Amino acid sequence: MLLERLSIIEARYVDYSNNPFDSDIAHDLRVSIRELRGLLNFIKPIIGEETYDTMNAPLREAAQVFGPIRELDVLTEFTEEVALEQPDLSEYFYDAFNLLGKERRKEMRRTFNVTNVELVKDALTITKETLEELELDKDFDWDKYVAKRLEKKNDKLQKAYEEVDLEDYETVHDIRKDAKKNRYAAKYYKNITSIKTKPYKKAAEAIQDEFGEVTDAHVNYDLLTDFADQVEDKDVRELFYQIRDIAQEKIIVIE
Image 1: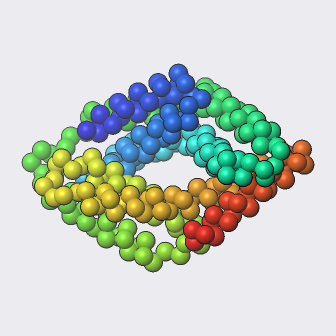
Image 2: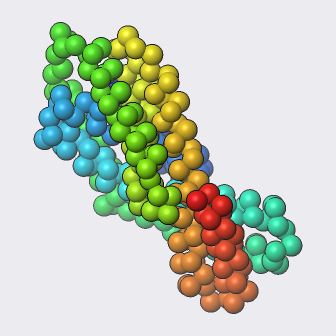
Image 3: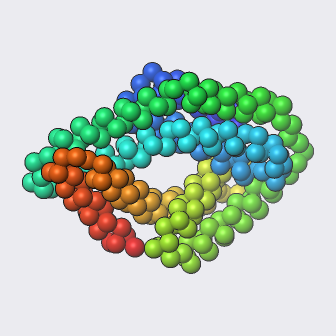
């Protein structure tokens, strides 16, 4: 199953290499990497810290290559929503989208520089070699392990969710990442345990979706501030500040 998830990453990287302009392809690539990292994290106590780090560290670096692309895509989607909901807000939406497009193409080219291409390919090679050499005990009680670990991680996640201060963005972000890991584990390890994993998956998804709005709003706010500070045209700069204020209002409503 782990090798199958790796093969999906490889396929999606080919898709991205063929068409990096498609925001869905870029997103799917990052998700596929995140899924495998989450599945490896779930069995870290079994495979050991060293083996886990051998695969997780390069995969994390590979995912970071595409991080700015995803952030720009999320920001563009938010700007599109604002433009549709408030078309009379400004006469300079075209200029704003043009600037966002130029910035994305710059980041897109960065993902294809020699260093980043080698980094991604090395990560996939190292992970594949490590997985192929990995020996997992078939006689191990995987059923019990998955059930016990899912329950423990779910209890921890729910406790963190109930106690978190929504204004503490960093903690909200960490909880969302934990929710993703739980969702992936419940989804992909369900075939080796007798318990019903769907409730764990649904609970994690609910937290991920809710905190995703908080995370996206914060990221959009910061990016819009950066764009506004760098734009020379005062009218376009003012539009980015206006969109940023809308993002800020979204944060307040959510929190």
